[in-house]
Length: 397
Image: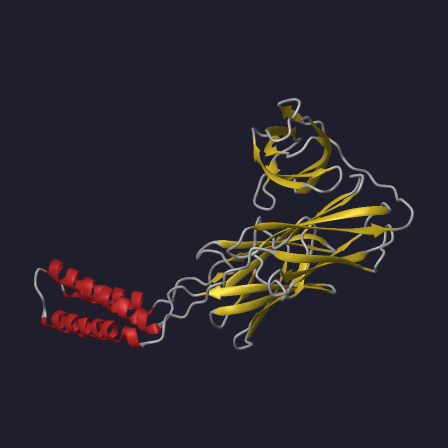
């Protein structure tokens, strides 16, 4: 029966010496994946970061794209680098310690810098030693019961382990706390300022739309954005008449600064609506506008005729919108489908998530506050392609 006690002791030592719980990034729970979608000039790219150490970073995109990655600790400056190609094997990044990090993502001349917190919930060596000692003691005692006798070796080992556990528990109040980091609470509101470079973009030419975020109380850059619906920021750009629509996810280029490259085919006034969510705070919608000059270029917008319930929507009451699709739907931004609805004057924007009904239909339910005409765009992924379907709604009193 001595082999049983030795096996129990070996298992206890392995458990006591095993590494801490997997590292987690940003606000993701241990063992979960963090998904962050960003819009590069090459198109939409979703980074998938597995919540384990080393961090496994993979990329998903509608078109081939390669990304260079660098994870840098803001505590000691240590770095881990790698590269990943959409649809290929993940890159391995090895954080040296817990705490705040920056994940730099580069493709071509575009760089995104994502604030990144690596958390180690169970961390300190003395905590691990104490917990391991208690567990080892229990296993040794079980081994003794199974052996139906307490051998001299078993008694001696159990006594030593019990002493270690007792010493750790007595000294724990005087030892430093476990190594872990927590996001500080965010403030409930931010101020946003939109700008374009160049100041007046031309039709068909690439320009940069920038959003600067400042805390409404302190004026400092807002740098505590939470990932919501798989992105730090959701930006909707629409022409005043609703003929042009863009749904993008700007890159964080500096604290409180987000930017995206766009090209628009029609001159005139454009509305910008941005959805953000600060950590431990509610969501917020920021709005702006800008002008595009030049001559209109050929473009098209695919339309769809939805099924409405009730057939004549009423302001302040829910309406259900069902849209047929042609093929199998794959999740995008964590949902089967997304519906963006904007009032004619641009004062109101709603973002609803759809549920799949059967093999080829999406259903959305939302409430529109005022009577009038609304412009709507349904988005979903079908056959590996991002589909956008436009329609209008007339809401009665």
